[in-house]
Image 1: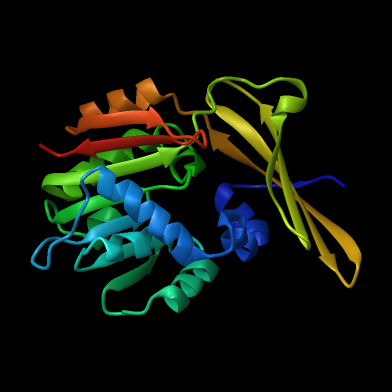
Image 2: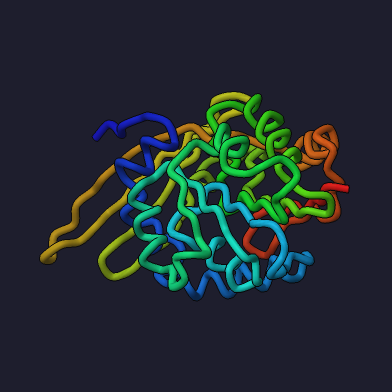
Length: 254
């Protein structure tokens, strides 16, 4: 089988959005509790009279729900997948707090938030490497900096793919259960891009079916991203990898 190749947006619409919450572990609220703890450790907390929080690449809502738990009076949740936004709505108990926005994170901020009003912007769950081009990153950071109020927070989580893996190390198990198995294979194309080939096996009535798809992912070095944040006028306060290998960057607008 030759896997279909397209953008990250196409890949999620065609293949992964249906299984996204399962990939997270199956319980969005459980993930939200852990994400809220991570964000709280970084100093993020909302106030009743404070500005909104913005979740770029919200998926099915784990980060959005975490921001609600932390007391932000409103959360703008942005994603390119209508399916995931619809699922997010089913997880949201207070619909007045969360505003789902179907849009491109590269262009949505100037329309979604007035300059200098956002208390926090999060771009988590490896969303940043899904951008089409490395040149999109500093442009997005510029939008984020303009949207943030003084003292506002930015949190980014992503995988640093700049170190090339070899041989069978390039095969990465994502998750397996009784009825589903997802594995990805990394193919390094150039210094800026890695092709991710996903193999998804699903079992129905005792029979396994395979679905395959591929999409490009950016290789973002942590040192480079720190430099881009500083160039956008943001003060980086934390930049480290967690126990799962995800890098966590926390910056504040002075």
